[in-house]
Length: 423
Image 1 (cartoon, rainbow, N blue to C red):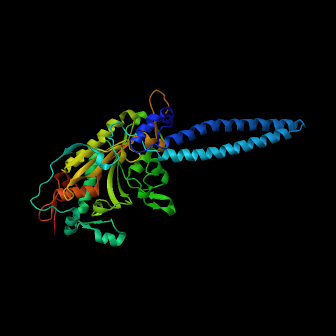
Image 2 (image 1 turned 90 degrees about the horizontal axis):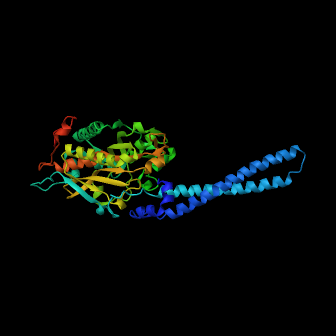
């Protein structure tokens, strides 16, 4: 949610910033509703005060045995005015809420221009791409042949884009999760296993409603939703709270299963476990003072890169274009792993600075020193490891001609085998 004071004081700057991401057409309508609300509210309050005073006079007149018909008629008219005003205010509040929820965050000046994925700016490439003296295969072919990925059985059970991971691949998943949690915990993030079912308010508060509602599974009977990321649950940890500045930053990391409908996804991405409806992830989340959010964003990116470095996965870092940002994000970095079967880099982690956008919607504030009034905190999120996509990168980049693949030393201490091969 954008700061209404900023919208009032500098609407043209806000509209110009939002226009970079193809948005902002609602600003004028929002400000018109806000102006009418500020005009109408004191009128209703004055009418209520006048009615109260008139009611008091009626009581005095009656006690003195006088005729209060004129005053009673006046009170009836005031009641009509008040009721009409309250009805209009209610409609205005509903319109304001709808418009403010629809507006995305103001993009960071450092986020590159452009409205498509291809407009992202490459910051750096890290690691050497593998060179094979055989024709490399994709993760599904390798995993199916080794008996560690079973899409057919999962399709019979649950439909398309679900999978069974089996055998040593399960040990690989558990090792990836533990490596990520240990790495992030060493950086001061408290581990959390959060709920994966949340109310609509949590998704609205983090900015996933209304924009991404069609991607989210709903349990209608219980009015609950399955989250597509534990960012939602972590952001809700301090909803409607006023934090002490001395307690910031607050940093968490969560392991959870995530669910996404992936409505409209088609083509190559739906093969194998790259874009599925259910996946596991370790997510980082930070609550910081506004002055610290830019530095915190770079810090989260460095943690993501350190994990990819431990896994010896070749990757690149890109700065996402404004038009490709989700509604809450002011700026986002993606780390993209090299996928040999596709001969391209694909996203495996991302980290976003959502500034005060989520905090305003969630009512999460902090009290600066010196007795100042509470202000909205800044929130940031980042993927420590998206398990399925990381497994794809490991299988494809470390595959051998015999169909097996090796695994990096960093995972062995967590119970992961050195190599996964046919038995």
